[in-house]
Length: 444
Ligand SMILES: [Zn+2]
Image (tube, rainbow, N blue to C red):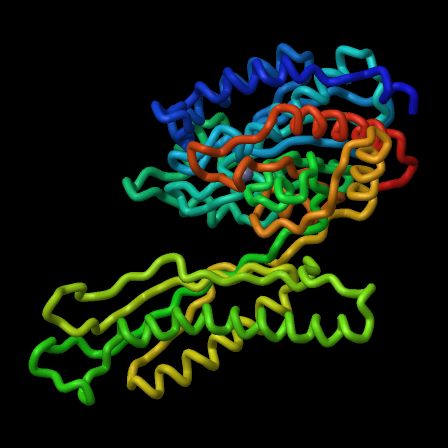
């Protein structure tokens, strides 16, 4: 593949684009505040549409507001698309999302300018509303394209100020009344590549420039409601109390206890195996990753002289396999029954999200690794415990992700940062991977 040796991305141009984009929605302290539906989101959309057009690509905004830019291929084949998202969490950092969109633009523009004759259509995408937003639907653009959100769900969504999602999408250039043709299949997309910051510190600790993502975790969330009895904080004897907060607290610590038990069970199992077969051990085999969090917790009436009668909280479980996630949820359920009975409180549980893990495609990950090896760029495999647009695209076609290190593991904050040298390495791998995938003679 001689072309790949002579065509090179321009990291200086990437940096100049990145500087422009970082100013849209920038905060005084060096972060960005660019949630979906904000003025900054709309400004960045206009910037992207302009730049994609300038790069000679055909621009299209679909019904959910995803921005696409495509250069036609010589053969009637499904496309290779690179991309990510451009929105941010409230008061987040500059790198989460735009790095992937601007890398996509850089790779495709470089190939376009080099006069590369692509067989497959090549393009970029910036997905709508990947991050949490006032409409409570994250990864909105990629989920819609994957057919995982219905028109009904989208049309019913409103923010806290009773603004309809329909209006916000219209302002972003989409149209929720025209969703019928939006769903994509492997006949439209041959492969999807997403570059993203790691948002952890494993790559930094390992001292490598890039990570090839093997899979993206499943995410399960439930709402737990504990109903006890509100009563006088002075006159009610300890034995007469049905304190919802104490039950909720015991359950919250119980989540941690279950995780710790799992950890010690795993390390005991690993030790045992180590004695027998030292070479076969991987103590942090990604398949075994599982974590759980109580992230929102409220009590009522929340007054200093009243025993809490009500306690509501969320339990989020993330893991590499649905069966591990569900078995942890079942263990939590057993604990809830026991604590509910012991404390005389009612505990009800409602699942609000149950998103399966997705493996990244073997052909794409092999190609990413081979491209890195061909360019002597050190890389390693990683499993993602953060959700990404690629999760949903992987449900219908070949998807792959490349991670670049986050300095100090910081993300979703103004300190979020990645070295430009690492991004330059990622650009080289993405370009080489795109060329190799374009040359592959296999059907979608
Ligand atoms: Zn992101």
